[in-house]
Image (cartoon, rainbow, N blue to C red; front, side, top):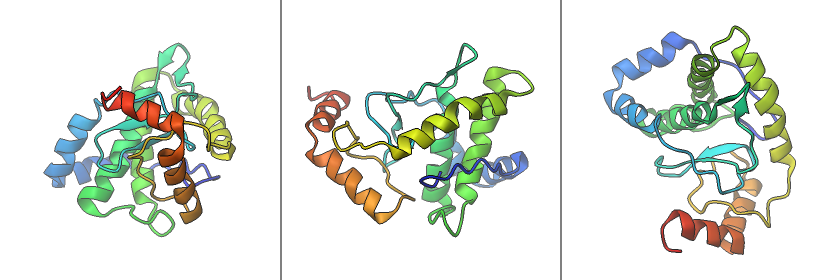
Length: 186
């Protein structure tokens, strides 16, 4: 999602399925990545993100993802992995402003998982009521003293935000402490 703007537009379900069908490398990546366990010890100023190499998904430690008694973190995992995979394997969504397809296909993957998990007619609306306000708030929070992962993918965020995130990840002691725990060097 673009900073300060919740884009909940969904690509078609058939569109994502068709892309996966015609791109076996992407499909293989997503099949594995959809089972990633998110790392929840960092602050992510837009709620969730993925590592630059697509091997780790981060969900902000303060993002509440249990909805109606059901843990929905995997929906965010699917969104992040779908966006990353589309960029990496197909060049879709590399520039969010001019090509929001990757994000919207990520929304589709997230939506479909939410509907599956919550199993109720208003699943997506309920999920959005809980998640969207938290993401909007997180985007507006100061993060210089909060732990930021060093390998966080920083697209499609503005240059000034990317700079601040890199600086926080590299110069913040809390970032280093969490990074060492994640990488087993603690």
